[in-house]
Length: 493
Image 1: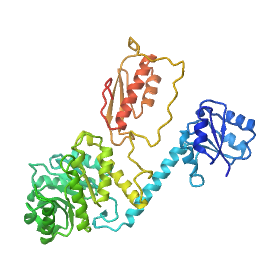
Image 2: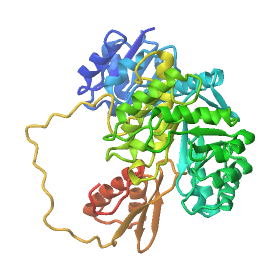
Image 3: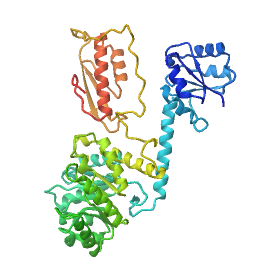
Image 4: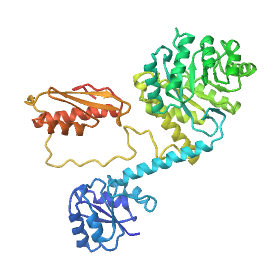
């Protein structure tokens, strides 16, 4: 198949290096490739007398013109390529496998295609997985994906409306199991209300998080799916009730005791008739023996390969001042190595917001990594947020460049001042909306672009300086929503 890639003067060498021998390259008479027009492409093709030999012509992914008339004239297909020249070689490897588009850039298409392939593969593996335990339709252990258990701290102290909203948010983020944390002053009635409230809004398995035997008894009577946690302090008091209910139980070591304590507690749980046992060897925080605890997890799996393992990721993420994305991804990889079944996170502090989603994606990455017998990279899904797989090429500073400086005076816009803020909203595509508040109108939107355009169109901005300032602040607000940060006008991001 004869393929031609069109570009401008400035990107020529990058395009040729990326394309290699996979396609021919034509340089259109424009410096910036995104400014290629149908007329310029036709002129370049006629000048080089190559228009009749190609079946497909790729134009830059940022081109906005309609090339349908050129397609008819040349008798070939014209598709949008990638937005960035260095991705062209990768794009061309999908020829014959992907239906390219004249309206959607190839990089967007390929991103969606790879992600769809990845997600379908994960679902196929999950459907076929042989497991260690089932909680209704949810599979645990074996060859199934590690499941995310999200704790709602002090769930028993929340009013039903607040608790329902929290559960909806957590399940939307990707929680496979909802863990209801019991407060220190919780009563059995509080536990019952929390469980019944959870059942009203979600069909995922529900666990109760307490060592109090009276609260556990009420939870199993109401029909909770998992009990957190059992050790020698409560097994003999409540174990038979848990066994009778059929609920799964997370068994932990005794406080201050080691690995053998966990083994003894598992034996005790079995002796009182509990058959659905999940073991928690306890993941210790960094600085408090995390390496030894990981070794403990590995040993437990080797000695008891048929018991699902509970992996308390939150023990680490809550106690380190580092972005949770990378920490969660790395811990998920370790959990996968020790064959954990449940990834536990409370998503309690501000710095760990997003951990549920991060662990869900990371768990999917580990499934693909295992089936491909590869490192968790180039899978079609990833947790790259701020850093890039491929860096764009830097610009060269022109010889006659002028050094920028800030204006010495600020002139108030006669059209009036505008106050900017954000409102978090999980249902929004970027996690919320931006609000631009003027004395004549309040504009709400999800992008800096749309809000600034609306402000100008309504005559609420009348000076270039004010427009530039608003553009900067609105973009900061948009990024704050995208990256789940707070925003304050005129403050540093």
